[in-house]
Image (cartoon, rainbow, N blue to C red; front, side, top):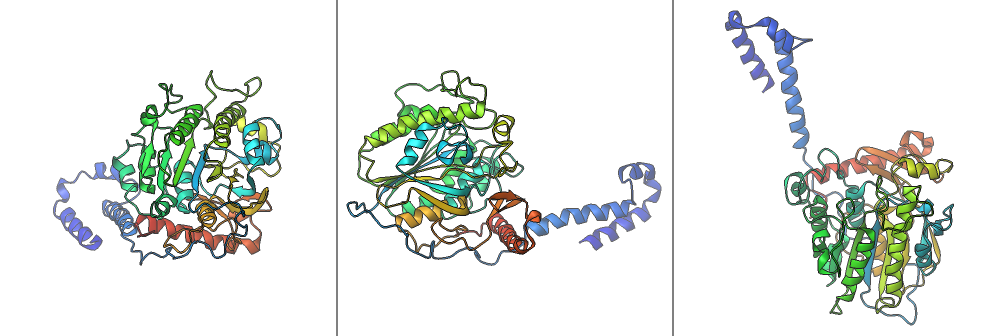
Length: 451
């Protein structure tokens, strides 16, 4: 094609030389002849097309098992629930290092989460594998590294739900936790703080939830008209809605309810009617203290409800705190903190059915493990999937890699590091993982992750 076009162009120029404004062409094509520039532009046009048309053979990430060993902790002798309910709470941008039960340096920021942790298993050395919210939600519920997040070229944000890029991304296929539970008769729902037309709704629908509750449907459950904060439901309203949804349950059908709370987002402070931390001078502490208060109202309800003996609660985050100024003022002297979008995040599991330990060392496993871990707790194994992670209860047989699109990190000596900063022995293993993730991106683009 290039040769034909160049030949035709050359003949045309030779035959019409007298009509060509060469000074104009030189101004347009500085640094080369018109033919050279034409050639360069054609090649630039063709190369992306060849990349887009790259063929992926089959579905290289599919397998028919999720974990290799049985859960190492026994069922409590006095408990038997065939299909326990699951509640997953994704708290926006929260690093474990500020939470009291993770040796938070202040000790009085999250008293309610701490009370929850006393009756649960606290998981240490557990990192967010991707960021930000779109990737964090998607990546944890499908155990993968999504190439595209929210606010980036090619990402979900920028269109109303059901339109444009968001609609295109939502047509891809993944195995997911809600889809696995749907097949087992669970009622699966997600509570979002954002409006129905937010592209986040498209993501949640793509993940397979039966029902997505949004800001617009909150009045079905809240006994008042909520006031929005940064165009979203407040954390207090989110937990109030969760309680009301639980109160409105009329069947014995097992359920999965997942929820994402928003107010701990970077550049968001607690509203005036919220609960600020002490003098209110640090918005990171304000928002964390405020969401802890909202969680406390739910936890108090839960422990006096019909659900406390048949429902597993998982408290975690979509990703770690963003390294903004209020957060950095709190961690700038932490020798194990690296200024990037990866850090230790909370994973606290309340399981009334199994004899879990008070604390568990994930040994630098990541949030890629969330869905396989839940599957292992529930005994869901021999199912076709394309999960890239392994349960926290299984040996981690690959080097941990953290990825937000094309940006990669790893973990060494409990520090987040760039791959080129690793010891020589570890570089090769991490590079192999990066190549695997890059292949996953190609499969994702071709919709060859799962079918």
